[in-house]
Amino acid sequence: MQYDVVDLIMQDHREVERLFDELKNHPEKRPLLTPVLCGLLVAHSRAEESEVYPAAKDAGGDDEVEHSQEEHAEAEQLLVKLLDAEYDSPQFDKALQDVVDSITHHVEEEEKTVLPGMRKRLSAERRYELGEAFARSRADHLGEMPGQATREELLTQAKNLGVDGASSMTKEQLRKELAKAASS
Image (tube, rainbow, N blue to C red):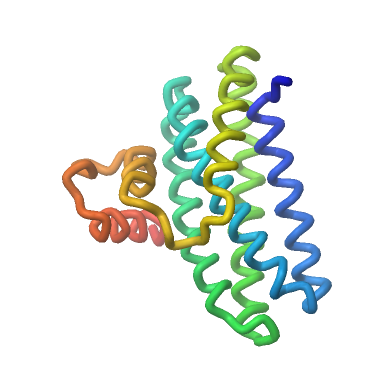
């Protein structure tokens, strides 16, 4: 069965929104759902970064991809803070709200610009190919937590951002460059 990558991305967006609602309204579920949320967001991000963003860039969406990559880097930093907070603390509530605000903003922008642009600029066949690649990559990354990116994944993120000289950087240098981009 074939799936359009845009539809798959939007399905993940709806699931993340559902998880946000559960985490806000049912604090007793936080110990179980926080790692689920973080794992889903990391897998989703890695799949977009490795499979979708290069195709979107090739189709003329350079600025959109760079901006989305910056937002992914920011979200990952926020997820680390969320995981570090005690589930019943005010710090968790603040960290959760920061994650919700950041991800909601990213989803709104992506669904207004990047995804409609992909529907317009990419053939249905290409979107189905990307759907397969996205689903496969997402499955490969499920269970990974924020802050655990490999050098290769950091290099992909840097490439999506247009960072000069990234291929000669160490993992720590790449991490610092991405953190800078996330805070700018």
